[in-house]
Image (cartoon, rainbow, N blue to C red; front, side):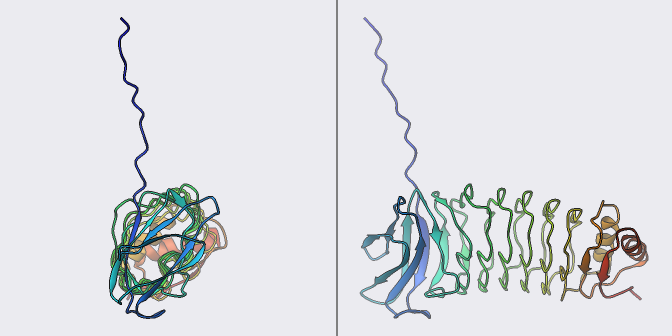
Amino acid sequence: MRPFFKRIVLERPAPKPMIIVVDTTKAGSATNTFILPIIKDASETVKIYWGDGTNSVGATGDNTHVYASSGVYTVRIASKIFGGIKFNNLGDKAKITSVVSFGNGVTRLLVSAFFGCSSITSMGNGYLISLTTTTTTQAMLYGCAALTTVPLFDLSKVTTTVAMFQSCASLTTVPLFNLSKTIDTNYMFYNCTALATVPLFDLSKVTNVSGMFRDCTSLTTIPLFNLSSVTNAASMFSGVTLATTSYSDFLINLATLPLKSGVTFHGGSSKYNTAGATARAYIISTFGWTITDGGAAP
């Protein structure tokens, strides 16, 4: 008698939805209404569970839902893959107050996704966004002024993070994002006025760091970033006053790197010590950099 083998079929777990919390009373459309802007291709299926016991199939563009009464609702957006949501500083941007989870579906596009969502206070780790099909997070969280922390997004395939956190004025720190393939971080943290510490990002392939930490007025120390590929560092620390020791160590480290020639660099109002002065002079004479800062420390 032949042995009996039971065939086991391994199925992929059902996608977990993106979960957001909305407050319909905040500025935007009518106080009992929420408009969710979605980007999707015709082949992609998105289902929206509005948090009041009803659901609908998501369409490209604005998806409007009228609740029986105004209030706070938990909205679930379920899809295996879709373009994403894109407030882009428009519509009901102020009504979303939290991103509980990004779900485990694949989101193709994050450009300006939460731009102007000034009421978001938190973003849970949950399942982080899969960025296998996008290379830019430009302006993704621009203007999320109430956001205090962000999860460890997988940015390992992203090449452009321009203005990703610009004007996130309540952020005090950020995780160590993988920027190993990033080439443009222009204005990435511009005007993050509460940002007090930053980790040692891998900036070895970045060519444009202009304005990256501009007006980050709480920043007093910085890691020893590798700027060997940088061709534009204008206003990198404009509006910032780094501690003399930290800024001097930064200059000393720069002087050990094979820097690009003719770069314009702004160190804000930061001052340098004697060792920093030597390194600064070497960078200017050897690589032709133009350096603006607070001058020599007394």
